[in-house]
Length: 99
Image (tube, rainbow, N blue to C red; front, side):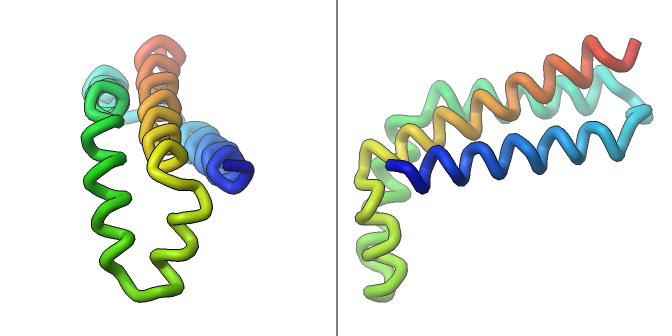
């Protein structure tokens, strides 16, 4: 589960860097809403998407299957929730922070 948290921290840093570099946004409401919609959809469908994604990875080549098996199905679901939270926070920051 440690690598899932590490990956989420890396993605959060990348998203923060992207928000910093692309300021000011051309249409902050549109881009913020886009990130917000992606984040909310990821959080809402994290359990289903995580289960499907984990099942697909187990049918992959052995190296890929072993990598995802380390985190387990619960780890993949946590990853989807984390990605959704990152996108949701990024969307709120873009909407509110660009005023």
